Image (cartoon, rainbow, N blue to C red):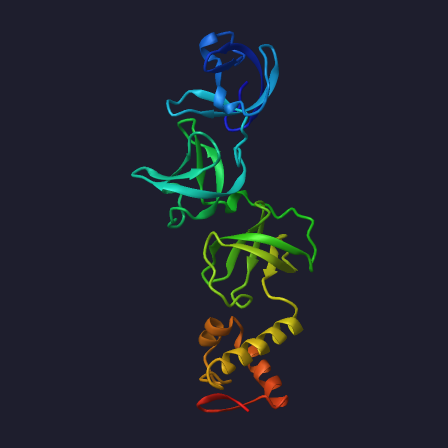
Length: 280
């Protein structure tokens, strides 16, 4: 039985001018699956060969085959580009001759054409390949990561407290708490060098984009000095500034900002008052 949206091994039944017909196993030639010449790639095939192909439906709803493997198959979670918005939904490029529909009801958030997001690939009620941004039900917590490991991930949503939900390796569920990041994050952002700092009871990964404490503070001290030196020896920020302003300008927590200011003052490099901070 042919499996739509997956890799199938089929026998080449006959050749035509425009391609090959593959045996669908139904003893009915009208069911044979077309493999167009342009989708053979660099492969050399002959009638009678058993070949591996990916099965999809063409623009007329007929089963078709390709040897140019797509970016995802049914059941996968994949990071794919939005290529069009239409009256029936959005379309994404999965590497097939025909783009895949993301119905409006399968869109949990507004998507921008040209941007990439995570999608789960499935077969809809009409028997066609489709995709949804609701990937959470398909994420796993069965992993082999340990605290201290470094991973890459993609933001797929936000909790009500603004903690970012992240998918690791297009498979595993993770979270970055709102007090662990200080730069703006958006759904679809690809994040590198995230450190595993916690593994929750259910197996979910707790991540942080922040470096080691000393490295982070050293970098913050340099940022503060660079800011002051580039502003004629003054900045309006001091240890009374709001956490929001500090996060926006220095991508830091107020706690670390105050600590960095204290170190710089002990070094005799700066001084501060109610107006702000000055270079000595």
